[in-house]
Length: 123
Image 1 (cartoon, rainbow, N blue to C red):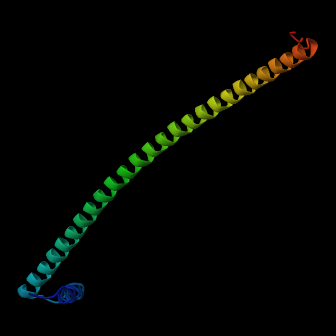
Image 2 (cartoon, one colour):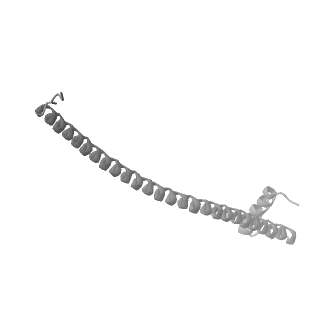
Image 3 (cartoon, rainbow, N blue to C red):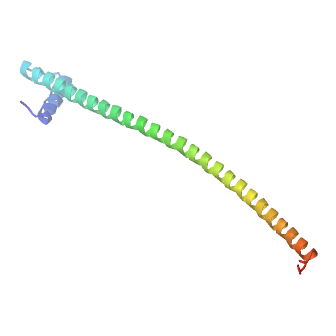
């Protein structure tokens, strides 16, 4: 079996001879046809290999796009939860401040009442 480079050289010679109008033997013609078929088979195999690689990469891209979409949804959900938590904490702080103010207000009222009515000695 001939190597690919030798077949390519034979193909070049065939093309030169054809362009120059020389007669080509049947054996050389068969070799040229074999070289052409071999090149076509190699190119077809390479194209099939590349198509398989493209299909695999397409599947990976689709998987990554799905993961990105899920991550964005998770981000939005967590962002919403954090916003809700912030609103809840703010509301609790307001209620706590209002409660502290009422407690202080009531203690002032008790202090005023205690100072207005001094305790009487029970004798």
